[in-house]
Amino acid sequence: MTGPTIFDSRDIRYKDPYGAVASGTKVTLTLRPPRAEGYSWARLSARFEFWADETAEIPMPWSGLDGDRDVFTCVLDTVDYVGLVWYTFTLERLDGKKGEQLGPFQLTVYDGGEAVPAWFGEGMTYQIFPDRFRRLRVPDPKGMVGGRWVHAAWQDEPEYRPDHSGEIRNRDFFGGSLQGVEEKLDYLHSLGVRTLYFCPIFEAAENHRYGTADYRAIDPMLGTEEDFSRLCREAHRRDMRVMLDGVFNHTGFVSRYFNGDGFYPELGAHQSQDSPYYSWYNFYQWPDQYESWWGIYSLPSMNEHDPAYREFIFGGEDSVVRRWLRAGADGWRLDVADELPDDFVAGIHAAARAEKPDAVVIGEVWEDGSTKVAYGVRRKHILGRHCDGLMNYPFRGAALDYLRGGDAADFMETMETLRENYPPFAYYSAMNSLGTHDTPRILTLLGVGSECRERSREWRASFRMEADQRRRGKELLKLGAALLFAFPGSPTVYYGDEAGMEGFEDPFNRRTFPWGREDYELLGWFTRLGHLRQESPALRRGDIRYRAAQGPLLAFTRSAEGETILAAFNTGGESAELRLEDAERIELLLGSARFQISAQGHVLTLPPRTGSLLKLSVGSDGPQEPD
View 1 (tube, rainbow, N blue to C red):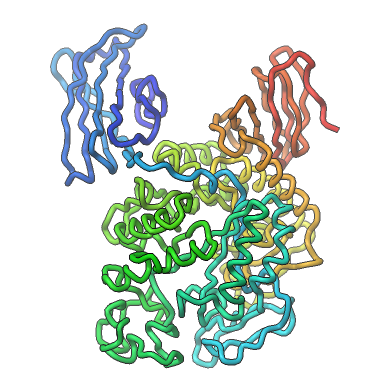
View 2 (cartoon, rainbow, N blue to C red; view 1 turned 180 degrees about the vertical axis):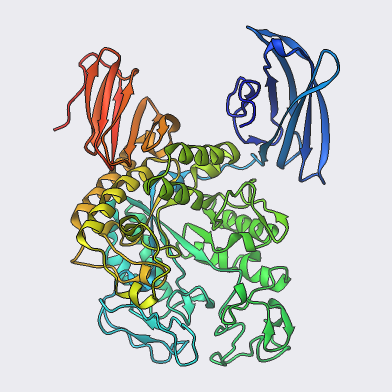
């Protein structure tokens, strides 16, 4: 924020309306320089990036005084435009000399012509790695694609050593199934889960199933299409929805389409240039030199511009996107969304809405999605009719920094930047998480303090936290989980984090769920958070107002429908105090905060490394002390 006494893009006295705006909105921009500076003239320069960098020069006439400040105002019209606008201000003095120059500032202009379903951002999401969540029997992998094998013991360590050729092939399975998930739907419902997000469930050679072998078949180790549809019906009966992982940037080398090992009877692109799938891939020199995801030969990349591939994924009524929504799914999460062309993502979005009007599309993007550039192109992820929300890795990064001793002001600044840059539908539909299948387990990170990459994989495989590390990790995880559930967007829990699972990077973060060995203290905490989120309109869809953000102390309120929830956190080693001058009544909902009345209002005391949620209200009965 440059020159906040002259212009503040987050204050509606200077920029109205706040934040991103729908196309066609007239934005009022106001400068308030000190009169003593002697400015007589101001100008706005607005660069419309998606209009070939067309620039509009708009004079800002003097419009009066505001106390001891001059006021210069203009209106920026965004009619017929969707994209980013970068704007700067120039001020000149009475003598004609150029004075202050402010900017550039970002304005996100989005397509506001479509209503985005709100259900995803309001409820708790639970991410399931299907092979490792719940098995009912030890399956026989004979005849399945990939030459896979199955661990007899559920508690075995996942295979992390390379084979004789030096590859880590991910062909070891544990046998988790869709029926196993169905058996645990009541458990998930009791946590407060409202969306089940599945890592890929389609037929694939690897246990992670990100190298799809057949988009039209459930992996036989997981079950059948009827198993999937029944799971969706049972989830819907419990007021839960189902989101699938769409991996459309690449397939498996071992797949029906590439058929690199000849497993499938029809000719794949690797076998014949006459294959109907040949144009789906980008060959440098057929058959062994081809574009692949991050150079991994077992994941050949797709030609997303190929008309036949587009028709297969989203073009027709029986396309992959529409077929599985019709089978019971409620939305798609797009793997590596920033590696898919914008019009490909738009096609998926249109197909999903055509099949199911309240279906949602969430994209995997690791940065600020409003400014993301991939392959030299500014992406349209959240400009409307593309992604309805994104995985919020910026939240995870800022939260981890704060939890591990960073300044709460940095967390607030990162999150307020997103709030300013994102359209409201994308901000409130963000998939917020502390951990995923692509990151180390959050309990281990918080307890140990680092990923320990300097250690060997053998060391990381056998590592388990000592008692003091686990105690610290649990304290910070409870604090972090409270932050996650209190923040706008969908709180997303990676399977087993609520049960206290440990582990560093893949595959140590993909161990089997510890049924019967859960950490019940953490489980109780996550369950309470899930129910608070479900019961509170303020936590589900309320606005956000920061009350404190300095050093270890972070506090904000969420308000909606006459309810205000205060979320307060202290990551430090000493107690911290927060003064609340506007609260006449306080009710502790979760945590160990204490409060008392002073002449200046309520004083809230937060013990070290704790987070608390409290309801603030106005009344005459005074504060309610916690039990």
